[in-house]
Image (tube, rainbow, N blue to C red; front, side, top):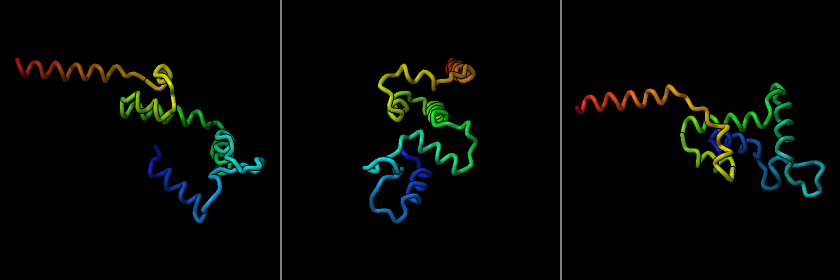
Length: 114
C-alpha cells in the first residue's frame, strides 16, 4: 500500500506524463524500470542524503514501524512480500514493558470485579 505522501510525490514526478516508466533505465532498449536499489541510490544522491541510508534500511524501518503500530504480522508480511512468517522475526522488537502493562491492567480489572 502507498501512503498519501508517496502518492503525492509520484503524481508530481509524473506530472504531464501519459506513458513511460516511473524510473526508466537509459540503458535498457525497452526503457524498463531500473533496479530499485540503483533508482534509490540515484534519488538519494540527487537529494543530498547521506550515503549510509540504503534501501534495505528504509525497508527495515518501514516494517519495524508497521509491526509496532499494528501488531499484525500477517498484514505487514504481505506488504513486505514475505512468503513465510519466520521472515517477520527481524521486524519484531518485543517490549516487555508493554506485556507488564497489559497484565497490570488485567489484574486491576480483576480486583474491581472481586
